[in-house]
View 1 (cartoon, rainbow over the protein chains, first blue to last red):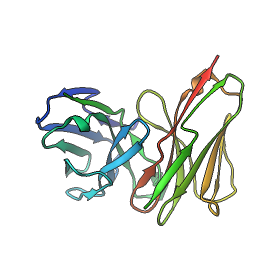
View 2: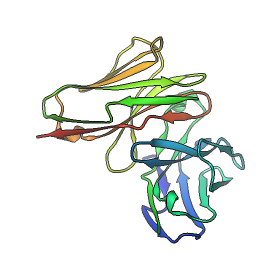
View 3: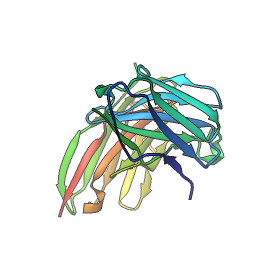
View 4: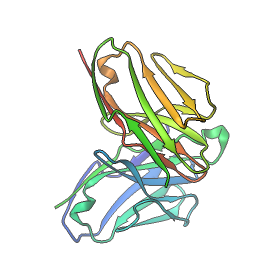
Amino acid sequence: DVKVTQSSRYLVKRTGEKVFLECVQDMDHENMFWYRQDPGLGLRLIYFSYDVKMKEKGDIPEGYSVSREKKERFSLILESASTNQTSMYLCASSSIYRDRGQDGYTFGSGTRLTVV
Amino acid sequence: EDKVVQSPLSLVVHEGDTVTLNCSYEVTNFRSLLWYKQEKKAPTFLFMLTSSGIEKKSGRLSSILDKKELFSILNITATQTGDSAVYLCAGKNNNDMRFGAGTRLTVKP
């Protein structure tokens, strides 16, 4: 079964810590995305990547950075965690090819991050 | 600015009821409208709609798109408690997908 795997289900970090959220997909997808999900706000795009070493800012990139050194792995980095970054973080991937379900995203199970 | 608006934000019904969830969108270079169901963790794909007026069905769920009015609905007939979830609508262009805030559906026995 194809998968997007996020390394942690729950994380608790202290304010000011550097936090790494890892996402790995085994579908050979070109595109990968990081969203955060907050009640009443839905999913908001933080960053996305359409190729190795390529990245694009989404709607709310401030306070975050990303890394895509290998096609299957897309990391979200909180350089100095703050309490307003407490949220559910969802990773997703998609293919650029129509015959591989181009428009459908496959999501990971999410990482619930709490910053105290 | 691109946006996707879902209504209602939450809905409580009883088993057997029929519900209609609404999604309006303004997405530059719109390509498709997608519906997802999210229970406790990852959203799971329900439908992708690209053409107006063509209903897509999967069991008790169906959805249709109106590209003139920039609107889509998701219908669930004969609801069951297992339908309780957050339903997400998303508008896709060439670059990314913009999500609505979701509709939280609760189906009571």
